Image (tube, rainbow, N blue to C red; front, top):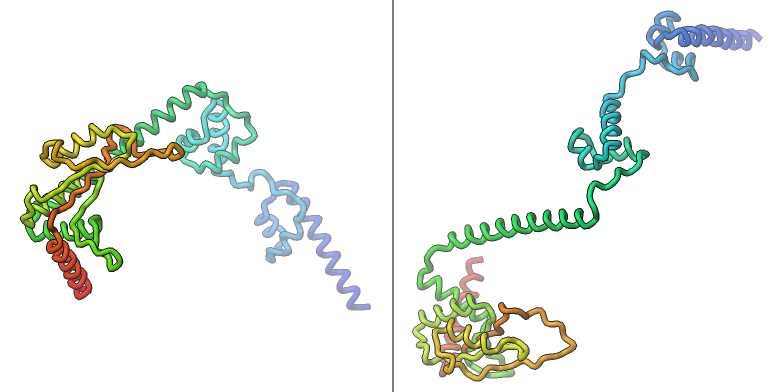
Length: 288
């Protein structure tokens, strides 16, 4: 019975303290003031004493973002976009959305056609900037090359031919030197390489290969001029038949087909090219 009486006494003490704590709380006391007044040092007990009683307004810390929130709502009501508010206030877009999402969307300040025009203008500026950056990168890279030595041109030509030229196969013996490409710069480098090897131009047989629906006459003149030949010296043009079910992308004035260059009496030259390539592969392998 003594133990039960002790428990009841403790409960009565707590209830008395709680009544006093609640009364102090309602008079505007802070937790620290209640602690000092009632001499209750245990933080958990102190919290239980005032449970359910809101703290007085003067103890609440001001929210640092209250002013930003109010300003964001003001700007939104003036018709500002999320991005504009974010840039103006220096806060996150998610915060802006949270603060103003209950407000009506501002009326658009321009027509759909005007918005599309602005988008197109922005895309044009972006692409122009990208084009300038692309060309500047290419110009800077081109200056890094400088002059080519004969050996550099020789090795470059061997690699170029082995990548793009015709090659002998065990099942189809044709030791011929023939190079076909649509890129005029590749043709120019290939010709410079043949000059370095001492292959005269009169040993070359050239012909155009192009789609039949293209401007064949213009293409023949273009390649003949690039080669420094009279058009009549070109071989018979090979025409690719048109397939009406195929949508061609190689169209327009820039499409000139391909130029094929074949070196006459070149079996020995082909064997040397293949040997040169094997030498390059062996040197690269040993270097590794």
